Image (cartoon, rainbow, N blue to C red):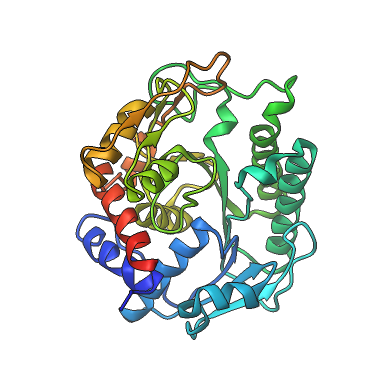
Length: 342
């Protein structure tokens, strides 16, 4: 019998609990946008694990189609502390009463959603405005905003520090996603100045774990898919770009801890600082999941916007956070989830 999403990740949270800082949400009420995506499902699984260990809280989430989500994830429909409301995050949010915290994680990262870059920019900014309006009207004390490492634009070799000042090229339409995330940070800073809300901006890099789209534009998901099919593992480039990956269970723990404990107004990178080339990643996925399969490199890509995409995480480490799950284990756990789920 296959395990549901929350039960599967519970083993990861049990493992992380020996190294990670404690989480204390007892008595809180949390609003969670993006509750049904990769970030949101990992967060709900962690919250379920905390609830089973005696913490009591209420969580309200937003979804375009709650009924469809619950049909796909029946375990989430059985969470007694979780309410999922139908909403478009770009419009006024539903929800009654006061909330202690808000975690705004709603951003569509599927490749098809980025076909109209004007819509990408407008959607992120509109969603942020609604999150801030909700926070102001419902007494939210602490608000975490999930930004992106794309805010830095093209990065030099080496981990990217939060304070280095690099940014997107605003003359290029391809900067729409990163520039929208930068604008969202500024809107949140203005809101904090006006209302006194403690705002925690995060800049999220790349991730792997159960729930990741294996057929999207994420190379690591494609490699896992190819390995599970027996190979070959195909690259659309020569694999020289450098990336790093944080496991989804680690990510969820990071976000809840930052929401609770991070100093207000200070940006935090979220990710792993253990970089490797995409070609090395493909070979690692092959070795861990399908030894002996072929890895097929593609042609070199000219003008690749982000050849290096690795965060510095010194700030996060100072709060007790780390990339606790090694990448080989993250690949194994992700593959195991998809093997038992199908």
